[in-house]
Image (cartoon, rainbow, N blue to C red):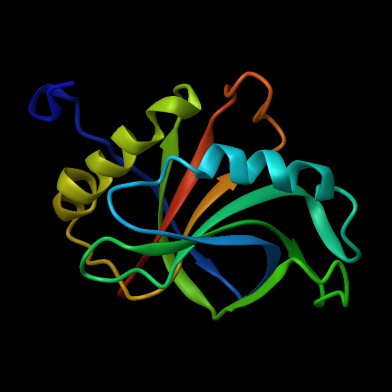
Length: 161
């Protein structure tokens, strides 16, 4: 796919988020290989709606501990009201209050990497905002269907005020 011919992406909105407690399955990825993320979601699927204190039916992909080489940790997670003690194989992550630029991804989940490319190469830069150091979020609402990969999602990029 020719990245130069893709249409730019617009920020849907700017939002303030309070502190969030994420609880989920985490793995490390070395750039550019992130092919394990779909199977990570498959492993996390049975935990969905089974975690004590889960807030709603929204799932998150949390990208954190990124470095300049493109390596990162990725967590398939749900937000919780407080960290449960089990299951022990799941990871806890506190995200402080943050301002986010929110972008919409309406296509099939397989094109998500292309949307991230648009955000970092022209969406965020063209908006006048600068990325802040902190976790980026993929927010999978109730309209997202994990069986088909359709239904859309939001990408929340931390920004400086």
